Length: 121
Length: 108
View 1 (spheres, rainbow over the protein chains, first blue to last red):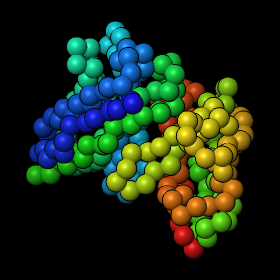
View 2 (spheres, rainbow over the protein chains, first blue to last red; view 1 turned 30 degrees about the horizontal axis):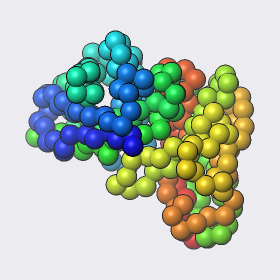
View 3 (cartoon, chains in turn orange, blue; view 1 turned 90 degrees about the vertical axis):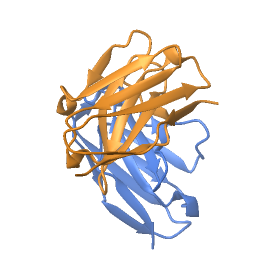
View 4 (cartoon, rainbow over the protein chains, first blue to last red; view 1 turned 30 degrees about the vertical axis):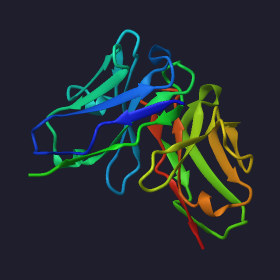
């Protein structure tokens, strides 16, 4: 079955960077885009961006432009999300999610378990 | 960006009752590119409805979606104990993809 397994919780200081991984299995890696979504404590869901696992093309939400980098490793079917210049407002659970039909801008039918990133001095 | 407004913020109902959740978009969604998710604490969100009215795989038929343009509705015909959660709508018509603020369905 389709699985997205994320790396473990992280604690970072303000100004640092964090890199979260999302290892996929159970389907052909290049057939579906991967999105990243985050949820700050007590807040709703926020879309960060998307990566095409085939060629690596990305599209980031303007809010995160310049601070986020999404990459992929086809040999391990893993996608990465790196967020730099962390501040306390970046404390959140970060999710990777697969798009339903491989079209990119599509609903998300499978999700990782979430990775808590805490930014604190 | 397209802003999605969900109402009500909280819905207090009893098991067996009908739940009606609304999602309004700040501009019309072409092809009804709207989805609904269920989110429980400590879990990943779960896709319920996509393309405004199509049920995702494995979703019980007590969940249904309707609407087009700027007004969309998620209906849960008879609430089961496991249905008490937060529900989000999402548009995937235009980048950036956006979510509504959520509706919490709580036990009355």
